[in-house]
Length: 298
Image 1 (cartoon, helix red, strand yellow):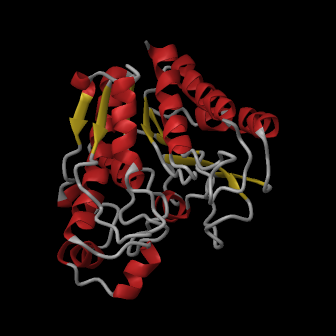
Image 2 (image 1 turned 120 degrees about the horizontal axis):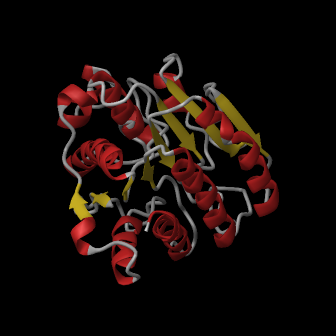
């Protein structure tokens, strides 16, 4: 299994910023320490090429991120102050998603220790998402004819409005989103299958709902699944408003990944959201997904 990371790009956020940028490096170190990923399986995410990035994003928007001319109000909507590191990290996240997708097609499973930036739209970013890594990966795979159909299984607690806005009109992409009904974003774009859940939902109700929704993604007969494995449904998450346990999240990941393995569909994972306090709870939940990968794929 190949796993891509980009935590070398320090986000350089101001003191007291709400985004837990240190979680990425913490996750890489935990996966190595726990023996869930070997050093030889880790690769630095490459910066995405313009050709691939511009399939999903407006050229003027991309240029404004690259050179820092973006309106400060637009950066406030994203949630980060602009910096060269933010711009490079956004390109690396998309490059990592595309590299991981190609690795999944070769090996059956892969991952990126970042990504799932599903709130980024064609010409603006939002919700800590600058560029949309899954949209870039899906459109690049389809353009190169590496695949004919892509399914996105998005289990972040926040609905993937950017995914739906960019990819929703395409007949060769299927998007399943299971998310908090009353959580961000407050304007939700329709996915192929949206499954909104109430605040406070726990393990049993969540897993029952997912088990009923998941077959729709495989009836689409995808050539690859892009799995947004956000851990913000965790009960300790500051932004999630759900009540899943670590065991419940592992059961969720097991259900998705075992379904992919059973159907013979390659799967590439992105870690998505996670904002627990302390952040170690989110890191443990992220690592749980790789524990499941090892159990299923070896």
